[in-house]
Image 1 (cartoon, helix red, strand yellow):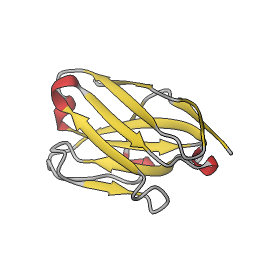
Image 2 (cartoon, one colour):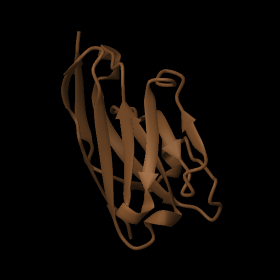
Image 3 (cartoon, helix red, strand yellow):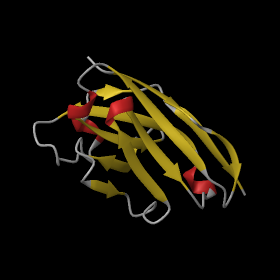
Length: 124
């Protein structure tokens, strides 16, 4: 079983940057597709396959956010640039094992493992 712990949230002015991390415990992290969601509604933000070769972004963050992973360190990252007030929310990391190394999941209902979240607040 993989457990997820997010970090890196905080308060930043509009136009600023933050880098979120999601550290996973467990030996099989490399076989999990990973996703970032935000808010109570679990709005999709970004996802990455366990190979790292397939990436997918919500239109609202495309060109500003970058998802990446380091399987050797059991960590997935979300680099957030040019932040806007509407990016404010609790950012949640999610994981789901997949057989296909390039498979990406963008629906929150298909993820069974979740972290507790980290708060991101962007002031105008």
